[in-house]
Image (tube, rainbow, N blue to C red; front, side, top):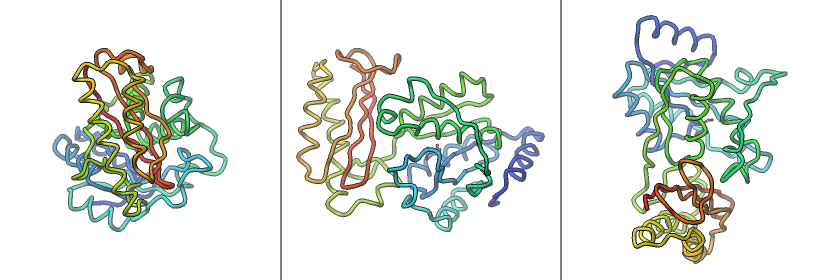
Length: 281
Ligand code: PAF
């Protein structure tokens, strides 16, 4: 396994693999790898000759009040995981390599970036789209792997690839959960014991919504009300949003019909966690 720091070296390696007709599978990450990332790496390993994992904490997707400084960084542990999982290349450039002095270009995401998380994290998806586009340009993957936990991110990146005619396929893999249902996230490490226990309520609330819908409930307002009540029973929980979205239009729905996405963001102490579930009415 190679640890590559420079764009030039990464691009040259990709060119060599492509020249040999070897498919490149790419897993973009910000490090602090967990089982969610490992599931993406395993799939890439199965499907592609070459597996590249990027590790880069992207400042452009953090707002001034976000956790850029305290975001967990552990290249040593991440390297061990990647080696064990058979990764060929870790691409881990430093900030100046990606955003040199006088860097000026960012991607604008339309309305898709202004709802759900985008409503509360202004500029977040602009930063995500920019770094992902840069990484795609540097690595030229055939396949890129993302987790369903960041549902809105996955939708935006699929759209980005289609809209900008990028020659690769985006694959979105299911959420990997802890035993009690909490979705795996690098940010789970911030939680203290009480917050960690409380956070399991997110999955319980999503499952309850699924049961209500299966039983015939069709009002988003009512589903959200029931979810709020359940989540707010936990002392450390503060809800930022719970939304029911039509998956085709990617717009909020009042009456539930067909396939919908229930997405939420909830703070436990200072830690903001997101989760979601796709449910068919
Ligand atoms: O999902 C993440 O970890 C990040 O948003 C990504 C896709 C690596 C871009 O920085």
